[in-house]
Picture 1 (cartoon, one colour):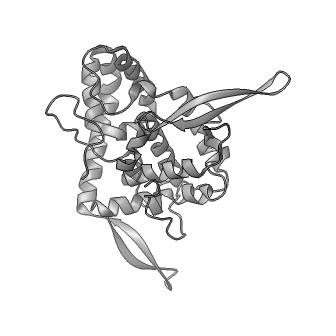
Picture 2 (cartoon, one colour):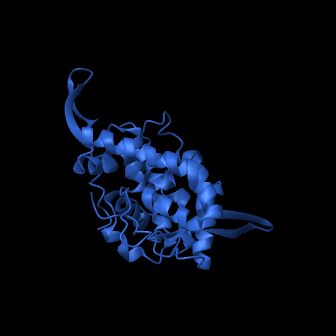
Length: 277
C-alpha cells in the first residue's frame, strides 16, 4: 500500500488503515458501489485534508429574498494534491474544470453539470475500482454481457477480502469507542482516528464527534496536532447539513442517475483518475 494518509498520532506508530475514503467505500460495497456516494466521500476527504475548503455563502436575490450555497474554494494545502490518491486528484480536476459561481468559488451543486454528471456516475467503476486493482484488492475478469457482448468485470481477491474484513473490524471499534473517547480522552480518540484514517469519513453518525475533536485540536488541548487531517477546517455545516451542499448530492443534484444505488456504470473509461496531475 502507499504511504499512510495520516501521520502517526503517537511517535513511531503507523496508522493501520491507508486507503482514501472513496477507496474504502468501494472496497466495502464492491463493484456496484454508488458512484455518487464514492464521489461525496472523496470531496469530504479533500475538505478534511485542507486541499479544498467548503464554506456557506449567502447572497441577496431580490429585495428581501436570499440564497445560500455551499461553495468550494482552494484549501490551504491544495498544493499537496499532486501527491494525493488518484480518486482525490480526479475530484480536484473536476473542481478545476467547473465554472466559478463567484470567483474563485465553485458551487457544489454545479459539479454534476455537463460532463460532470457522467464523471460522478462512473466514479466508482472507472476511477476507484482501477486503483483497487492496482493495489491487488480486486482483479479484472473477462466475461460477456447477455452472453454475447465482451465486457470486463471485477472480482475481489483474497487480499481484498482480508482488507475488507480488517476495515469492518476497525469501523466497529470506532463505532463503539470513538464518541466516548472524544469526551473522556481526546488523545485516545485521535489514536482511533489514526488507526482508521480517512475511512472514518464513511461513518456518517460519527461526523459530529469528529467536529468536536476538530475543535479540541484547534484549541491545542493535549498533544493532538500531529494528525495530517486538517480537522480544524472541517465545517460540517457546509458539508452535510446545507440542503444545497453535499447532502444534496444524494438528491436533487444527482437526479436521474445512481437511482438504484448501483452506480457501477456501463460506459467506457473516464481516464485513470489522475486528471489532477
